Amino acid sequence: LTNNASVSQLCSQAGDRRSLLRNWAASSSVEQWRRDVPASTILGMVDATLSCRFPRSLPRVVKSLLHRLRLNVAFTPYYRHQLGCASSPLCLECGVPATVEHVLLTCANYTPERRTLERDLLRTDSGPLHLRLILRPWSNGNQNAVLRPFVKFLRSTGLIDAL
Image (tube, rainbow, N blue to C red; front, side, top):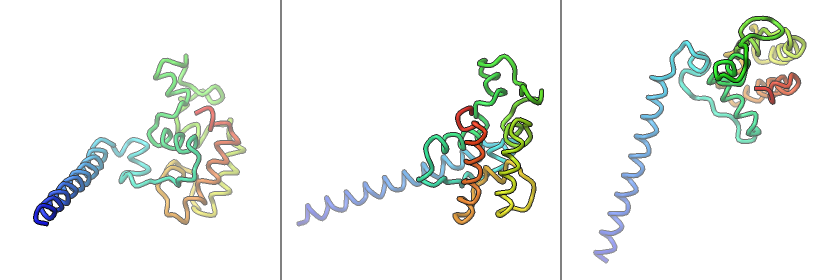
């Protein structure tokens, strides 16, 4: 029994070490993210604490697009131009750089759908449509109230496939 007790103690110590290492790695990576995400970026503006968690039930294609939008690497004409995959960074409709902000908030191509989105979002936020409203972390109660209309907007505009 003495051997069993010492083996048991060693196993629990190894588990404690793993747990401590895992916790240290998690907190270190969050701290590194916070240092590396400038406040001037979309992610820094909408979720400086990196606290957003999307529902598991959200389709993968939607989660991927939301992450790309938040990281400012959605495949807008502006970003595709930076990658060398498009000849111009400009919006064909508006003649301005087709950034994430332009495509979601001001592009004339999506005005009717954006008005519907704004009307649907008025129930959760009375202010004007802005990136922080649609890409920020939400409380559990508001998450579906914001995500449903936004995903509907992405689908109705075709942006869910284009970006």
